[in-house]
Picture (cartoon, rainbow, N blue to C red):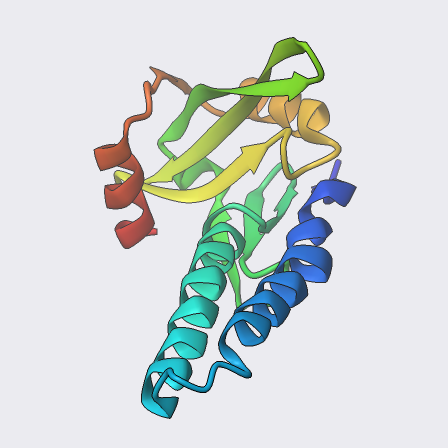
Length: 170
């Protein structure tokens, strides 16, 4: 049995809408200002683009990945599945951690808390794949496979320091 991850439609929104709008706004704000030196304009445009791209690429590199699970191995491809393929034998993986991220969503006078579940596949103390119902539409199917074939290593409560450490070591 082979399970291939499928992306949710949500992940395309930042690249198709937010990135062009952010660049257009930063250019629109800076162009036409006669009293601002050209060096400051160029610096503002470059820094705005860099901040926006780095935030989006952080998500793409760490979370928006393609994962293929089968009875022998796990195949991981970063960057929307366009990156180099890495293979891990299923029996060599230590297991998996889980955690839940809660996000408050407001709509009018109402607010609701949405929970996104994450599974981190661990190999030699490092996270080799992140599976989430935020980014993967077939998360439940992959979670069932993971629970059947790997050892549960416990709930991992996320904080800002663990996120930075994981981002640098992934």
